Length: 175
Image 1: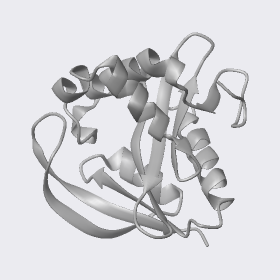
Image 2: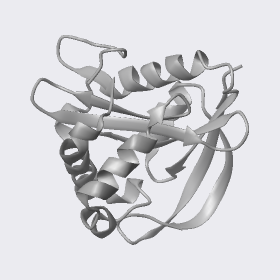
Image 3: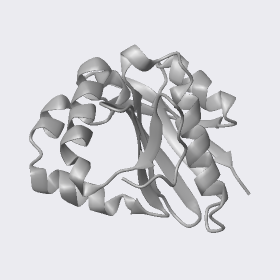
Image 4: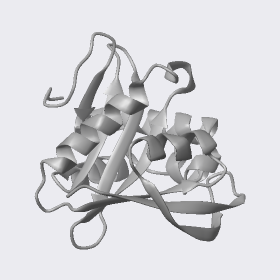
């Protein structure tokens, strides 16, 4: 992994490499076991992916407009956040997760700051969008703290736990 992103004494924020596919997969499995209502994927969908599926997915996530940032300690992957292109001049944030035992330590703030800084330096990107389960109050408040505003509601979205929720559509202008 390269060290172009932020580093602290306890954890490191970095881009993902193909060599990390197993740790990345395990992080997704943890996320879907811990908080399935927060994701549009089910545990079954993610569990059925092959090594080749994971490697292909990671290869797509290594450019300026489509990236996956990983948070890791010396021994463990503890969180993730990514973005992908969504129309002209827009990117969509997705897959935001920090393991439960690491929450409340400012790690989500650090990774969001890292992503916002990298997007702010990209002249092509004008707006960042995301969707979040309306019931995930902590997540909604987190995005609002970073300047995201509610712009709509997407009704009846099936989440990873198989239940139906409404999702908030949020966005932030960066230029």
